[in-house]
Image (cartoon, rainbow, N blue to C red; front, top):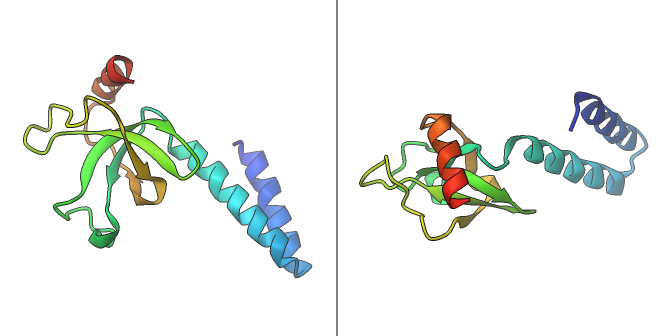
Length: 122
C-alpha cells in the first residue's frame, strides 16, 4: 500500500464517520488493517510470537522468535528458532500457522541468515 492509498482510505473512513455510516466505518477499518498488515507481515520478516496468555510480555518463556514464510488472511506461517539452540530452526519439517495478531515484528537474527533459510526451507 502506498502512502497515498492509505490517505485515501483514511479520508473515506473520516467521511463515513461524519455521515454516521457505521457499516462503512467497519468496512474501511477492516480494509485499512488488512493493508497495513500486508505492508509489515510478509515473507522474510522476523517476528516474535507472543501467546495471548503472555499479555504482550516479550520476556514470557512461551514467546518464540522466528520468521514469516507466507501469509494468509488471519494467519502467517512461520518457522521458529530452537530454544535449546537459537542458531537452529525448531520447525524444519513445516512452518506453523500463527495468528497475525500474536506476532510482533522484531529482528533477532542477521537478516542474511533468515534469507538463506527461507530459500532452503521456504
